[in-house]
Image (cartoon, rainbow, N blue to C red; front, top):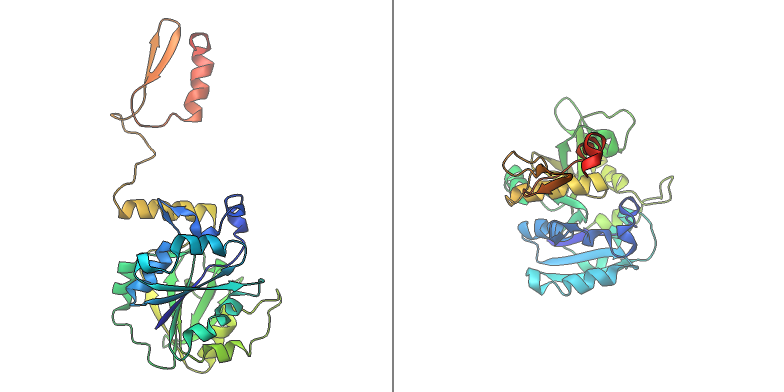
Length: 287
């Protein structure tokens, strides 16, 4: 099975950081974001990986990951010359995949990979089925949302519906058989001029050739400042290096009045703006 990381997009929600490099090289703790989806592919046994990205910063990705040997994989690169949608980016992998299955992951999708593997168990999609992955979320209207019949059979995935038919989101991980590229060639651009992955998935669902797993594992689309922050906090907890932003009594800075001077010393906590304002208001003569 070949692996594909789709690492395109302009990263406009993470400006100005993305003016100077690819979004997928922004750090989650000390590790560039793209390491996380790469590790997910490796955990599925993938050894050959294609990274698809835009031309502006693909050199940065290649400089960081090179041929993949340091990560114990073989990495190839393709340039998506213009924005044509996720399915169009996937189509660039046709020659790379050949007659194999492929496992596709969006470059800003971060998983607790060990829990993901436990959720899935034995991964055996067969020869001709697409595999989708769903997770229950609080705001499904932000994502592709699956609908099911009374027997739990998958009926559709609708992109960002105004009224979601379920509380599940379609996460950025997909597995497709080799004919995926033939199907992409039949897709027509959406209203925003792009080839949509939801249309590709619908094709398999209508044909009765789609199956799915539901996940309990941590998952984040780390493409916004808030989600990037939340993902970094999750990663810190996983590695037991999280420092609480709320100082305890033993670690809080100590404030002392010495004559006409306010001294602040010691501790590893934070002094908030409300405290500073109160200090200035009540003790301005001593500062």
